[in-house]
Image (cartoon, rainbow over all chains, first blue to last red; front, side, top):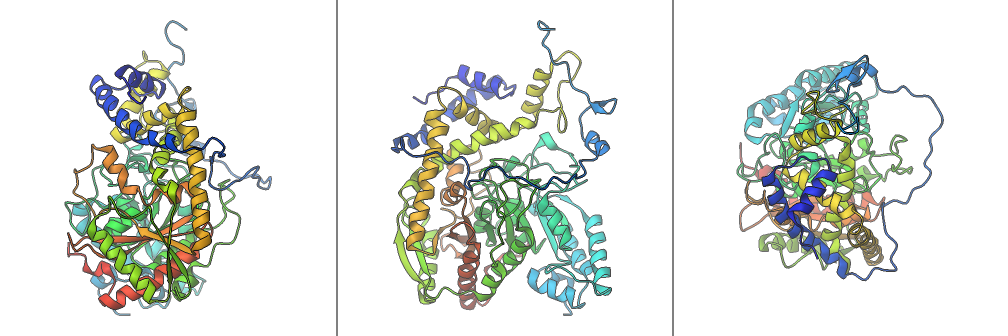
Length: 100
Length: 501
């Protein structure tokens, strides 16, 4: 059930935006299978009627007073960016060649 | 207090604070002594990623000047502290132990750092950690491992190995850690120091770079229970900037630490957190501590938490799932490393190239594990089932706390292992957190404190105390009583036995 192929790892890497090398794909295929096999034990627990916990402290609709507060300093934020242009973040082209 | 600089670094934070406040020593003198110690030993320990010497001396001067005017000072005013590099500090590089954030200077302070500043504390710098807090040995730092002052060939625990090693090396009297599955408590255990994971929501996560948002919690690291309590009371409390922050008074941890009493208290031994997999030397020191607690007037009962056997599995599905989502923000667009932006690559290609170059092996492993657990077809069997097991673990705790006021266990199954021993064996590494993980899943609080050296290897052993949510004061009540009985028998704190560096 928990065998994981090199192709599956390649697919996961694509979804996770990781440009893994061939050696990494081989390495992770083995390791992920071992880890998944180990964690799959939780399937033994009969828990069909048990509600899931997503969060240890149940909270909902947390509000604060509607008071204006200063935001981050724009120059300071842009100074930490890898590339800027005209006081904005500069990003690479967002469409692939065939879509452009 | 007329003490030489060499003695200043060995003083508890509580003593330093009193001496600074009484004008017997200046904060500048105390800060200089610690900076000198860092300069002397950190090349070998590598607890710090960044030492902010100039800023530290400036804050120390401000505190000294403030004291002279008679202004009211905080309980730890002028006392130096080190901060784990996962909490933002304005204008100071915050890397999370990752290449992807190398040199990144955050434009804001985390709430923890703001509170340290507001309490007139002196921040010495940022401490080393496993990349994005993923690890139990600090070997997964992109900037090289931290060494355990008890034996420099061994790991200081992780992910907060830097914060724990800095204490054991007398580079700082206090530090801040964060604990997602044991990253405060396990380093405390293997370095002979004290570490507390407060109740989830007890300390603000604002500015804490998220690993797993439903598990992460910042907390105090110290060399004694009282020092941890003093720091706990500085950083804890409601913060409107964290929607999961608990809006209730902070339990009086300092009073509890000063009182230290277990008479009439019911202490539960968790059956599932002992036995197989735990080193004999660890169990021996643990069992001796249990007898000691009994001698001090505690009633010891055995409790069973059957679903704890599944905690590791649930954790290693929930954590990677949350991490894979949280770490999606590191895409090389607004901050951090960008690779391959040559005009021909698309944004998607640049993201993949940047993340491949910027993340280390363990981070990639967990991101893919989380991506797998959350993908359609597997979601119910993995992430969904793990969340249900999480509910059952919380119910186990609730039932156990009906029978006992606090629960105890060894903090970690082994003492500090050798650097390199488990670094590419993820499952062996994950087992280090087997006793600490249940608390993160349920969101309650726990402390680790030293209970002796293992007869097998002469390395520190930690005992874990667990209490219900928002009963953090009980940790200090029990911890202080045990620490005081142990120091009476040894004649000093365990940390005094650490070899000279």
